[in-house]
Image (cartoon, rainbow, N blue to C red; front, top):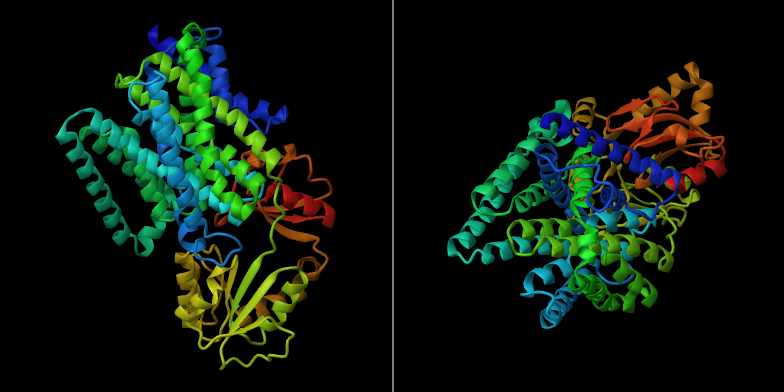
Length: 604
């Protein structure tokens, strides 16, 4: 009978998780994060509402694993490649890493002062846990908002992103240290340090082992080996953390950080996110709402007073330090940044859950903290979007290494299309320097010289010199820096095959001429469609999270455009109305220029 009740409650929770995204889409509530909606519906069907769901062992287990997986994905969301590869680019405004670090220091200082104020007001018994909760930032809210506003690649967006990354990482570590210190045992702190040492050791071991075909197999998730390896790593860290007296959420978070440092394939990351946000994580957030008794909170006058005071503290802690950004980006954008950074969700809920389980806070205080987290996620995205308009997409920057009879004419075509093009050539290149071509002379074509000249600051890098070995060497260095779109000129068939196995896009003049001639003979109309210059066929990448896992027939703005192919990872799908679009998909689309521009704006 108990097992039957468990499955009934689980079925209700699963049905809620399925229906919520559909309702949000149909009601056009884009401003409301899905996880917040899940908590709100959990309130309606739980203790605060109709009481349709009862707590049991099945839901408790899945909810706990949902929290663990949420912390894992939080660590995975930290894109260290953006710090390494883009933090050194020449930009208008501040260095994003320096500006973000200064803002984070300000957040820490202000948060500690506000926590002391809460202590003096009698709301808390000590300042350190409140300081951590006030200072945290929710990456899960900040990143989708920046992507939707097309700000993620701008200096302003990069600065906000880095503030979120640093605050998320540092507060997670501070929470682990705080919990160890609360035990008032020297051995607990020693075990925490040993745990960190083990994490570093595991990372070094994996990094050194990550060579060759086996590592590529794991990184790309081929044959589910990568997925199995990730879950083995996640559970290893969770078990290690629990057996060493460290909270399991820290182990899960660091497992995600390690995977992020290994630069996994985007399609593999989407696969991991789909499993988490499709099943486990909704159960956790719905159960947060189910367990929350709002009426009991409202009956305690001290908790009723605490909620607006703590909410104000969260916003003040971000707004004051964000004023530093006004010098570079203007006061309106600085105010918007402070409001968006005040979004606190995952870590506050996780910290409140752990603190309540350890007896540091009671159930009423945990409920109050969860309500504040929900309110910030309702308020912040709406007001940020009003203060900071959607950014125009900057023109693509294309760097071409090597000036020759192939790259020079192509550069002119790209410039006509509005792209920013630089051709890096040395004195031995035969290209004319008569002002018709975007030539940038360098002493020699090697990695060090090209890096100093800014060749690796491009969105697309074409390694097109006559030296094939140099082309492949430059491409490998560019990949390590985080450049995703790489085209390598290789005429040697063996070298080209090896480069394709590594995942590079290979260009060969001999092979291209052969394919072109055969296409003119066999399929002249198809070739004319691809090569004509009226933009009637384009490739569009799905970057807007609003269209993740949405059926093609449910997209209203397609109009007269026709989706010819959906490229996902290394494979493609012949689309139809029931084809599901995922983040990271590349759509080959044909149609009128107006419709294609609208699709590109919406999807990217």
